[in-house]
Image 1 (cartoon, helix red, strand yellow):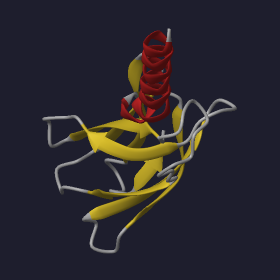
Image 2 (cartoon, one colour):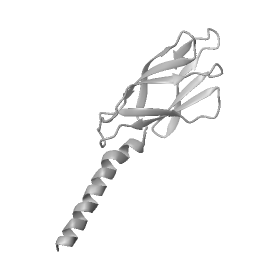
Image 3 (cartoon, one colour):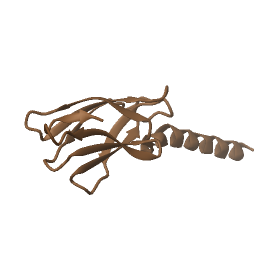
Image 4 (cartoon, one colour):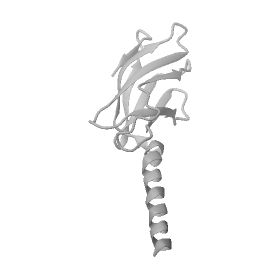
Length: 127
């Protein structure tokens, strides 16, 4: 009986840890860009983000695009469960190549164009 109880407790602890930290490895698909700023040298962009739903935080971002003209951003949730804030960030610095013209963000089930370089002025604008 004691051995069975110990196994159940260990399994519950492992499930709790998996939930607590595992959420941080899942893509956050409810992220919106609220503001951005391009460096004077046009080689980096700082973006401010927010969550479109009532729960959650972001902790990191990854560009998953192989195309130098497009940046495809995938954000990851903070650790600590669904509304965990361990490692939470809302501001991210992104390297910006001279070829880049469009920035997409994974929003729910598809990448949405959120920031683009105006071909006439060369300035970055929210779409």
